[in-house]
Image: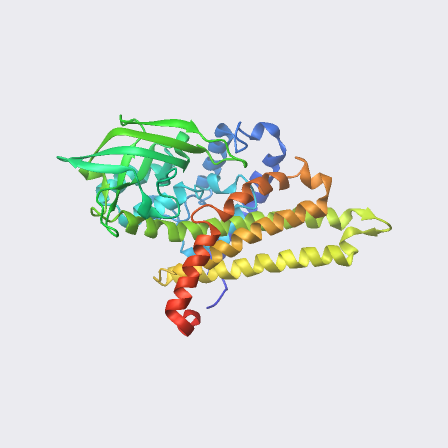
Length: 398
């Protein structure tokens, strides 16, 4: 594969880079730029989003006819990396989780009527969305087959009962994609539905406190007690819930990697600037061999993650599901993010541990990377199974 970006991809990448440098990075140094959950303040977000729209940088992942930019996955990889050099970046360009993955899956599988009602308002930035799947034990986590939340058909409606938790963005979402059990079939027992925040029969029990800074809407526990969903708001066919989840999570895992690489690079940029001028015992830190080893190792790891991510993006652009390529990138880049920010904090010393840089923010955020969208151990288990089944063809070219 050719790693040279298309002229269109390079144009978007360079314009996003300039926007981040000019508009977003300066905002991070001001306390009033943040909301109470350490994300960008809502009023400031709307002003920045308006600027992104006017500069043609809005919704890179959506088709032009829907108001997006129509970029492919490989082009997105370079652009998402640039936008998440700022901790505020992805949400400004309407490319943050969970809206990013929700928009992509709805664009692929929803009917035209469903797209008009449920997708377009997310694309336009008028509403936020949430993907409702994970449950507390003994329900589904990494294993969807353990799902306890049920949707029972009664006439032309599906009545939902159960509990979900760690639902990203739920407190700020208006549109929800719900996965629930509709039968005991091992492969076709789950189905997908759409519901609105104002529909009766469900509630947010609590916003679960977490270690790191939060996406808008936090991570919530939800309870369903007779939520009635019209059959017209079912996504795909009855029993296609697991299929929809697989369609959504592959690209969504990879866009996580794209964004995490931006945070990884930003971490090393902060460290490189510091060691480049900080002196101790008669020389700059950057001139010391031990410091050079640390920076070089982290830089090499970032480039490895970029290559894995771009390869998976390229395969997705070719129409391949790229399951093992996405899993490899997901595991590797989650580790790269943690390594990069940990290295940067070590090199910056007490300053890195303080809130005088963004490193402590990134460090707390980074720990979730090895858990979200499938724990690293689950992806390794899947890769092992594929290797055992495929033998030498596991490493085939093309």
